Length: 146
Image (cartoon, rainbow, N blue to C red; front, top):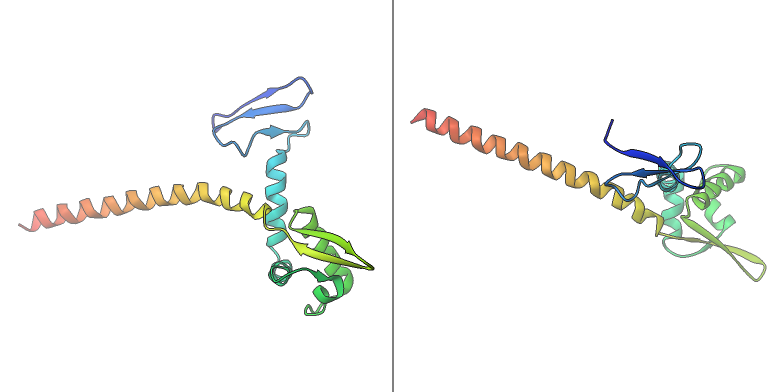
């Protein structure tokens, strides 16, 4: 395994001890709560229609029909997309008079950026090793020619 240890706590759920602070709580069903949020956000942004809705809402709040208008899909489908975005915490709904305005919330994307940043460090390290390997091979090849 990866060296992580899982210990039950007083409430019956388990706590995972790991170097990554994002992966710390495990529910009694074995699902990491922090990862659930990350999964919800990644799932929400995985669909092109939801990404288009996010791009639209990044310009400012909009009413449901204004959001649905540019998409060639049933209103029911737009509702489902909005529910997925809401579950991920990427949108807020607020009532203003008789209308409900839907707004974009970018904060959940920070979790995605943080998660990706861990892998960016990994790949930067690997690429540096790769680059070093070729520098040494080039030096060796240059010495052999002399």
